[in-house]
Image 1 (tube, rainbow, N blue to C red):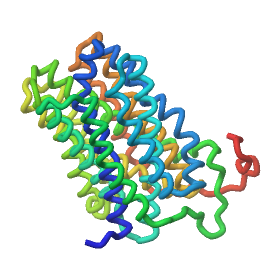
Image 2 (cartoon, one colour):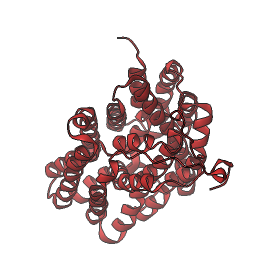
Image 3 (tube, rainbow, N blue to C red):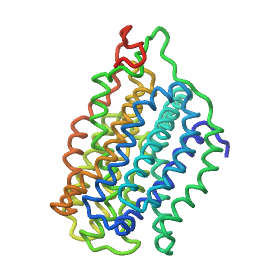
Image 4 (spheres, rainbow, N blue to C red):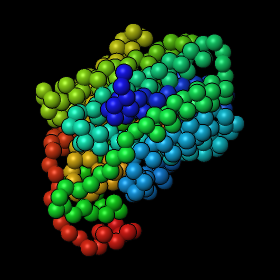
Amino acid sequence: MSFTPQRLTMLAFFLQPIAFGSWLPRIPEIQAGLDLGPAGLALALLGMPCGTLITLPFAGPLVAKIGARAAIFWGFVFYSAAVSLPVLAPHPILLFIALMLAGSAISFVELGLNVQADLVEKSSGKLIMNTSHGCWSLGIMAGSLIGSGFAAIGLAPQSAVPLLAAVVLPIALATATALPRLHDAPAEGQTQKSAWSLPSPALIGICLFVFGITMTEGAMADWSAIFLRDALSAEGGLVGLGYSLFAFMVAAGRFGGDFLKRRFGAVGTARLCGALAVIGGVLLFFAPGVELALMGFGIIGIGVSVGFPLAVTAAAGLGDRAASANVAVLSFVALTGFLIGPPLIGFVAEHAGIRIGIACVVPFLLLSLLLTGRLVPKPVKSTHNPEAEVPGVL
């Protein structure tokens, strides 16, 4: 098999979340080991959005300067070290700091990956964004299954996650090195605004759409195992199956996403999947047993599968700024949703129970469904603003 730019990009997407995925089924063990309640765990999980908040405002201009390929290479180096830190934290405060560093690393490398996928699409004329994110979903599913397997054989998370990160790193660096050097350039005669300028109303609408999607993804990642354990009395390796099934269906939806987009358009595809996500969320809330809960996880997975890839393409195609700048803003909001969802659910679960807590995703999914029309390609007309060209002027 030849390693085309498309396949290399997909491989990089697959490799990135494997180590992080292996951490997810071990969260209940870390919670128990540190004697944290739902609210205490929620506070610790806030470390990841804090890392994202610190990093992404600077990541967009930096990726625009050094290129997506370099961002992926160096992002993998930082990420592979940072993702191993949470399982080693001996205290809740250190867990918060470790998750903050991991959130910073994840946001940077994922920005590079999304910009690279957009540039490969533009240079080749072939749609790969949804498929690339499908590969990411396969990666996090594989990591989750490996993590569950390590738990089943009794390998401590303090050894399992760093071991997996060390195995994946050299493969990831070789893949990043082989990626083509592609650069984002404005259309002929087009003046782009500074990466530091305020986002356009069109971009804000896309960001609000994606928030509910990624908030749900974060909720499934961090609370699916605890939901199955606490609400439905699941035990052992069964508690990790909810997220594994969710991730599998996300991957399946994304692999079919480019086909659906060609047939129904971005808005039609988003509306179909958004409706499924709402149905899955309601089913999960009312599920009386593990079987129906697993079905709910799967339906939600299909429902949220294409939301973020469609939003990345829409944001990158606005044309008012470099694609890396718009994708950085989108990633900032998306990752914030991904990382704020779990603490929100934790706080609600502390007072109302995990079943009510996980149902918090449904109103946000309804909001995303209402905003699917924002994905219609509407490039923003460029206007010359001298102030926007001054670095640091917002």
